[in-house]
Image 1 (cartoon, rainbow, N blue to C red):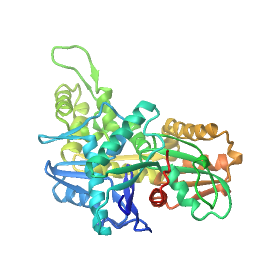
Image 2 (image 1 turned 120 degrees about the horizontal axis):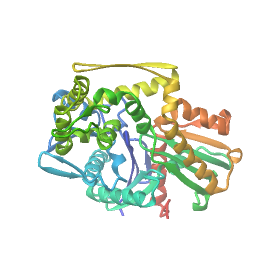
Image 3 (image 1 turned 45 degrees about the vertical axis):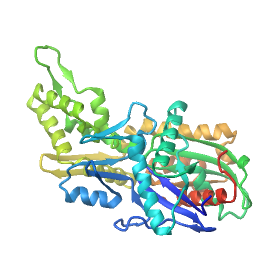
Image 4 (image 1 turned 90 degrees about the vertical axis):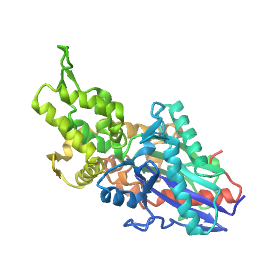
Length: 429
């Protein structure tokens, strides 16, 4: 087996790569020279046409430079457990989801090989505690990731739960045994590991429970669309088809795509796009028609990505402030709305409950109460959301909460997992 073991934190929003190379830890590699943090490669694919793809910061740069023509994909990792989502078509090229993920992993592999000066066949790849609540869907997602890793050229792969990797990162600085809860809050999933950690060697029986929920930052972004902003783009538009007296409203399948950052790009696919055209022709009022025209501007002028970036900014603002003004100024899509922290909390209630149900399951399956946990280590960008912190403080107390490096903690633990592998130890049996 090769001397090099790559560690890949393939995230919904950002991806990082490290390695265990020739007996040495290699922390986050600088893979994206155009990014503010070169170790963070945004999980983006931009196809100006079917035969060319850009990644990370360059994807955004080229997308803007080429007048936002072509297809920009974000949050595509979140489709993995969805058996109904097969992929997409760019011009006449069929691009399966496995190939889409594989193309991105291959780019990570190429950049890492260039940085390390060697070919790489072995990879430790982080995975959520749960891709989906349904076991079959979770297994399907993992199978897809295995196929994507093969597509990328990896011959030997281990998938390590991301919160367990974060636990390994914390363990390196430990001086005495502790019962630790790791909470990893990312873009697509919220994951938990309860682990008994000691400074000496890792043992499988130390991992008491792993659980989670396939909802996190993207789900919180989507509440702004589903509760208010989607009305600007025809979610409540009414129409009447020719030769019919029935008044219809925009179908649920369309509004669901509209609400989610990972799904909205697929409104551009031919059948859906033509259907929306028919809805516009059959709109009952000028207001209904204007809303759908706004949707066409959003899609045709490639404003989906910047619009959701504004939503992300609003979410961050409301984590610190009582109110936030949403302003999106683009010809044909002038949207001005005020949001409050109270609204955000109310709209996010279902997502919040599901996230903390995952935490409760983790504690319950280990037979542990919140009082018995010595430390709570938080990682991932969504850990900064105000009500996430407040709920954790209520359950565990502020003094037991510790925030790790938001983006590098999981990767550091994956590098540690790669080290274990090089020594003949599998982290997950």
